[in-house]
Image 1: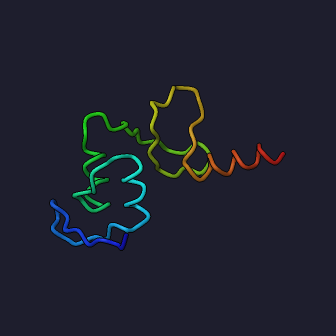
Image 2 (image 1 turned 45 degrees about the horizontal axis):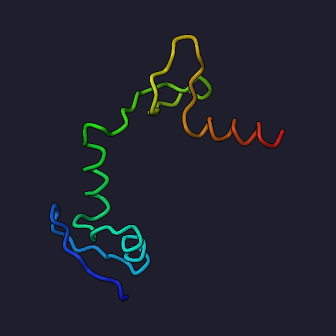
Length: 93
């Protein structure tokens, strides 16, 4: 199967539906996408069942970030970078 060029129904830009993506869609018995990846992600984040994000200030570095859970008062909350650094530090300690 060669790569296919498909016009996005939302933004009208042409995107490439790669041979690898086609194989995945075929295996899952899915129809080819009608939207480019940018429009698909916008649509997914705009839906009502999309995970809610909460704005936080990292207790470690002070950076503003968003997390997919409601932070609890009195519990430390970390940005993505500090969380990943802490996770790798614990794993190799």
